[in-house]
Image 1 (tube, rainbow, N blue to C red):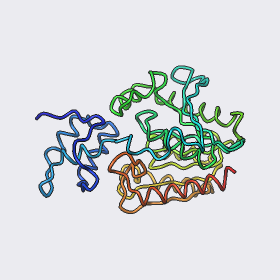
Image 2 (cartoon, rainbow, N blue to C red; image 1 turned 90 degrees about the vertical axis):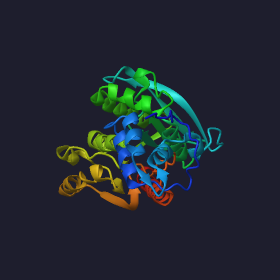
Image 3 (cartoon, rainbow, N blue to C red; image 1 turned 180 degrees about the vertical axis):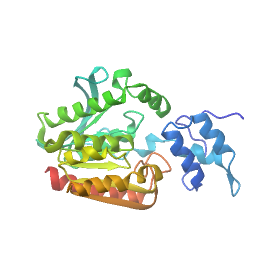
Length: 306
């Protein structure tokens, strides 16, 4: 079977294409590196629904970053630039991140934005800009900086991130939070939002930073170890997809630990959504749920960081 090169390329109109749940399930396996891109396309190609090839559906799920931008690089409400900072104990001792600064007078409450398992791609940079136009100093670290940075496509980015020491990635993210918290433009109040792998990082930071962490919003992120939950001192907002068995299976134990330790939390489960529903660069995106989740996220940050 000849598998096309579909990297960042789309030759079909996918706007109205209905994706079979089996293709979503395969894509989730591919995104989390349980199967290769080739295996994903091969398995998808064996599926046909109402005359539509599963391969066509699979191609529709690959990201289209150019169409997903919501805040322009040149938006006058903010200014964004790449910054480097020291990261002792991390993968290389130095890190780079995308810093988005509101155009209003500072200092500003701060939010760390943590990417998925493929490095700092354009979607995550856009999320940082979205926060900046709402008045937050936002930093999106790139875990791949020690190996050259996000390579321009998610497949290579995923492989690079997998090659790094995961524990040291966590150190790099924690150092990013400390850099942001102590930034001259920061009020010292800091929260974090993250997606998939990044959601797990948000939970980790909440357990690690204790009183120095002020609000966390993990989107479909892995739960922290139950024994570390007692260290959380910040309100947490867990954003969850209904069709996300792998992550949702962790929730009962996570919730029990939150309740046992009297941690302030809310959990929103969005009907009809799958893992990645906030990411508007792919067909997994659910506009209604993503918009509502983002409104709730901003409300939590404004209430706890301002």
